[in-house]
Length: 78
Image 1 (tube, rainbow, N blue to C red):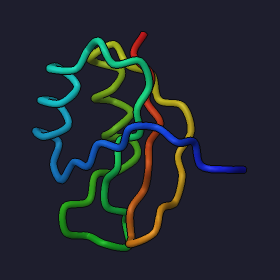
Image 2 (image 1 turned 180 degrees about the vertical axis):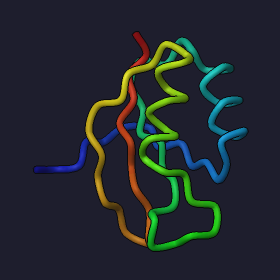
Image 3 (image 1 turned 135 degrees about the vertical axis):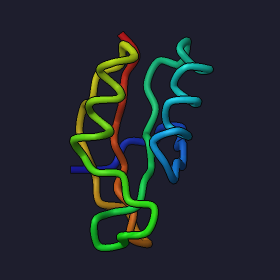
């Protein structure tokens, strides 16, 4: 499966994710890029990202393993 070409938003903490999602509620679909579990510093887990997205009216679509120890979470604003 090919990785979709979406605007990529790099976040290093739950706070950064919350701020970006709140300020950009008009965005349609983006890829939230965070460190994978293999990179424990500044890691955002799948469950945490999904929870934050849901709380702010976003839905979590697919996830992709990206180069450099990152994970891309496709998110769509409802």
